[in-house]
Image (cartoon, rainbow over all chains, first blue to last red; front, side, top):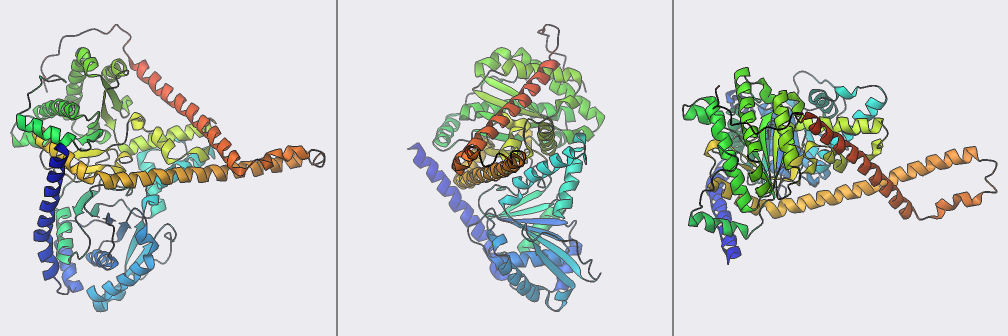
Length: 251
Length: 361
């Protein structure tokens, strides 16, 4: 009896959330198919109070839409974000980086159009790590997209522990030098990206599923029910929300 | 206010909700970021310190709700290392509040034992004033044997600091030869954290509408259900608690699957690493062996007997040696930590002091 009641409550909440999703998200999705010029995206970017240097896209859904992910990546780049990480626990996106690359090229064509050569979007993952290479022409805006999965979470912290242990044993480091700020700079060095300031989590389950446990310290975590069919407008509204938050850093 | 406030009778409706909730899975370990005391004080135009006092009262109340619901472990973020950056007035005030509350807790030791609550302090307490360290050490010591419920108070804590402490512990363990570098794994690092004695965090609640973890349980909360609640901490009510548990129940099955997969993957990695290390060791020892006994090699065929043992057996042997190594290393670590807490205990016989005067800051 009690279980049935509890189930009923759960179903009612699910139904309520589904309806809320329909009302809040569907209209924006169907209406805004108008093309955005890069110029108007840049104006939007100027109107934001702050922009994350690194945005994390965390997909907690069973099905992936590479086209929508590609759109979000290109919007982010056009807004001026230079680091993007895309995470799914099983590494589905990481394994299909070729497909994502293709979709990014298509999205670039659609969203940025003739200015597309001004933007250089590179994909990286543990099998294709960042190489210190071309500084690039100053006109080209570079963006680095890191494809991550659960292996890039706790395990990288363990790798770091082993590395530090090795360095201490070979006299390259003192034990007392293992401090949060030093270890953080080692991580930044090895990852070649700053901590994500904003993480958008897609999916109905509210959990981080192993996303970058070291780097998630001060990340704003915003949840959306799905990444499929996300419009530019709703994406921008997330960044506006992010722009309005203020952090006190313990003070 | 006491740690064990006078029990308020639940309304029949609350009791009904509780029994319905109890028909589903109840989180066993809930972690709470009690955010919003100062904003509450501003909102109600009362002194900041008063806001913190209200925050503590809410904590005592929440602990009671948790006990009633069957939540056996609660971890709260009381004071972050970053909080030392606040104005010295406020820091002194928070320390004084903690002093009073822990002194009170020590007075209420009968109630602690009656409820079977074990208090643990999570964090680098060496950063705190000495007298507060003593109080904390005493609270930990007197309640150490209790097993029914666990209250973890994060004091002078940040998750990154915790991870670094664990890395130091491992590094010195390797340096002193207790463990090998290759023994360092997710589960070993986890066992060196301050939270090593805790079970997995099932539900993490943050109040005041902020959507971040702020350096709290970063490692431990990777597979926790997150509940960001809009209200300020002193306004947190039993209904918010019920809603958070409902939220947990709806998320639980998917998180559990992910967590199980993670555990399986860890075990697979461990087996792989055992295999690799065993092979490395045996090639090392055979090359060393052949070089020293090169003349006898023809006569001592029997030396190669271990080679006939199946690889599986040797991997198992390696694994059990590794486990032993790790166990004795961890024993050392935990003994040292316990000894540190003991060393902080005041030498004088513990007096039952009268409750100190009201907060004066």
